[in-house]
Amino acid sequence: MEKDKKESAIDLYKNGKLSLEGAAKFSGAYMGEFLDMLKDRGIELNVTMEDYEEGLKNLRKVWKGKSR
Image 1 (cartoon, helix red, strand yellow):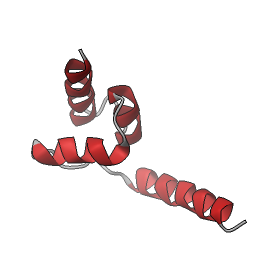
Image 2 (cartoon, one colour):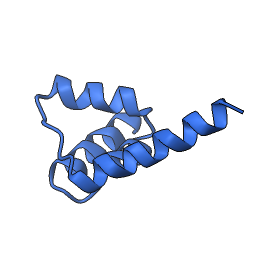
Image 3 (cartoon, helix red, strand yellow):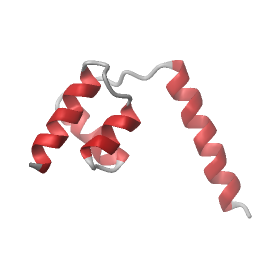
């Protein structure tokens, strides 16, 4: 069952139905694990400028929280 959910998440991501983060969450995998699954299948990332900017924004939040 878990494998089916991961495969579904990969298909949804590949077809543009879920974002990278959304697909990773749907699959139940950590982001790094999900990226590895995509790489193993030869699937390129569908990263837009908005995704990149959102990632930077989230990274800034994390770093601010750690510097306190």
